Image 1 (cartoon, rainbow over the protein chains, first blue to last red):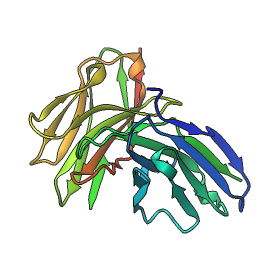
Image 2 (image 1 turned 135 degrees about the vertical axis):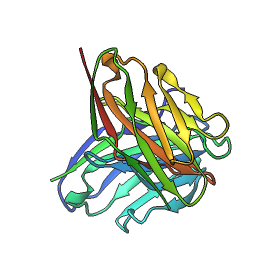
Image 3 (image 1 turned 180 degrees about the vertical axis):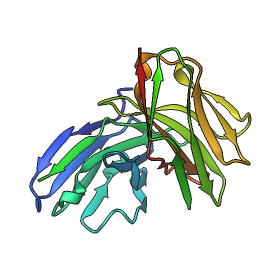
Image 4 (image 1 turned 45 degrees about the vertical axis):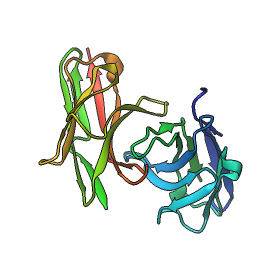
Length: 115
Length: 113
């Protein structure tokens, strides 16, 4: 068990560029979540996968955001035409379904800065 | 819909003193309750969670929390803090149907000698 990993850890981009983040969950974890955390706030839910199926998306996830989890393993989060308001820490978490209330294990996050 | 309020944004505390972090929630459905800790430059780590049963929940690193349904609270306590407890603490709720977490804004705990 190597934990949840995220790549890159930091990303600086110019406004209007596209960025893609990767999350590798703990092996065999079937649930995967993306959250966004801005300075001074708690993480906010973005989207959730069970295996390869994306089951819920937050209204925070505008059309510029897309997430995938091909084959139910790693996941990618892409932001198109980035805006300064997208600057935040993007967190990935995974869990193994034990029924409701399963523990989510978080990665270290990807910090995005949009100039 | 659920909401979580952490009543203190920052709590300064001396080493070996007790600490209590307050969390209130509102929800129209049954929820599960969690406390996570975020150390500087690290990911969120689960301290403890309440699913059902005893309202006093013990977690890692000497932390415990008490679920109070009538007051819709889930306060976190530690009887004696260490310098290493300096971190940000997040209370979170999750509806019982599946695992999305809704977090409070966090409480920064600063432990000084």
